[in-house]
Image (cartoon, rainbow, N blue to C red; front, side, top):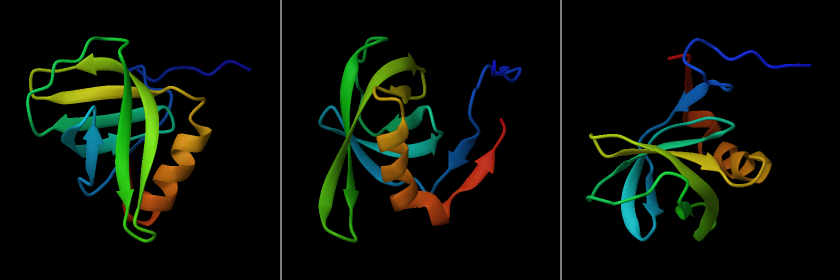
Length: 111
């Protein structure tokens, strides 16, 4: 079964969250949105990422006071400091963490 891509080439709907704090390659970033394929993060400090660069993304789980780490690859970097990241794994483990942390606080965007 083939999956058709929407006109904007997204395979998965994006979920908009509340701007949770992440740490990307040691620098603070805020969550813009996430999908089953990856994340969009707005860097709070200038960052120099190369397309396809492997990065660690850390997020704090306040419920159990633990930092979770996701692995990803940089897919885009825009002039406004937003970094698009594709999950390095098949997305299953990463999405499980995101749903646990944000599942009740998200809304879906088709944009």
